Image (cartoon, rainbow, N blue to C red):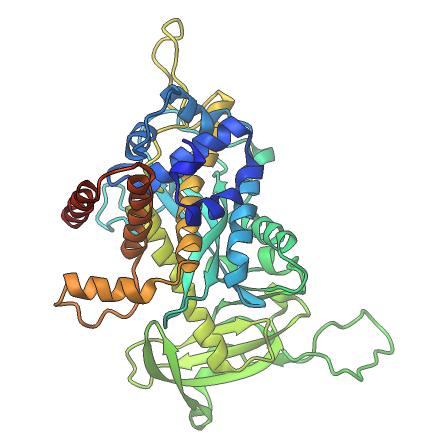
Length: 467
């Protein structure tokens, strides 16, 4: 695809990725991005080529080789996306880490295995919530938006998790180790004036991730109610003999603190998950030596005054921040779940049809198993699914630079008068906006009569509403 077939606003965003590819590969990259944005069916490479709307003299195999053989590194593309988002990020960047499952079918798919599936029915045939597919550890940024809301979670790094049964022992890495590596990469990509506030669920609130965490990176997450807590050592503490002491006296656990002193709860109004709720809280600064070592943390214990939910405990290495600030920050962790849903349902994150090796006739029928023998199968798996996340990030970066969200909200209200409470654009609104910009640019590129152009505009709008 030629660059001049793309509107200038989107071309400026895509130009930031030009250094990641060779010239021929960059042209395929443009075609794939535009096709990915226009594709309304399953995101297979051949369908994406057709959805791009540009006739190409290149064979479709070249677009398959873009993922399986071309010379480019996903880390460089992630870094280019990060630089596109930097102008919209604050000095303290909120980062969310989590993993998600992309279900796959078929023999000899590289890296696929049985993993926990939170979306699976508890009445499955195996009696467990597990599914076969790829497990991805993903790091996302919380990008503030000009409209009122918690922001948008945009993935900026991803790594494929392979279970111990599906890879050599020398290559095996736990999800928490992969998360630590992703955080280290992100920290190395950011300018010196930016800091990271990392958030994760209970799986990532552990010593594997936190003990080796850069002191400049802050972490907030849940804590077991029976975790052992200790007082920090006083600054003027002087030890005369014996093994060097690293922590003070033992403190009651969160469970013990919640069950005693019913008059010590503080009532707070907290804005979480789109609502303002009243919670009872207790908090203290201490050491959770098991996970964070000698790094002080603030522990916040919460109780529902209505008794509908059990008591919970949260902690943060931002020990100087207040309990309300920490609870509202951690609630924004849910944005990554919204990001996963959009990536799977709209951008085909789990629809990749590659990553296997076919057996030849002389070899007979391929033996079922989780590993593809050829390197291209591995490259295809490690590039195709993350590419869907990169395209979604490109869309968000483009839309934030257009300053058109108010007009899009009003336009949606005109076409949907029953939706009077809409206050901010959705992902579908962003997709409609970029598709409209590309279509208008293509129409205006060609010299047409005014009447013909008006008819094309009318037909385009009607087709857009029908789709």
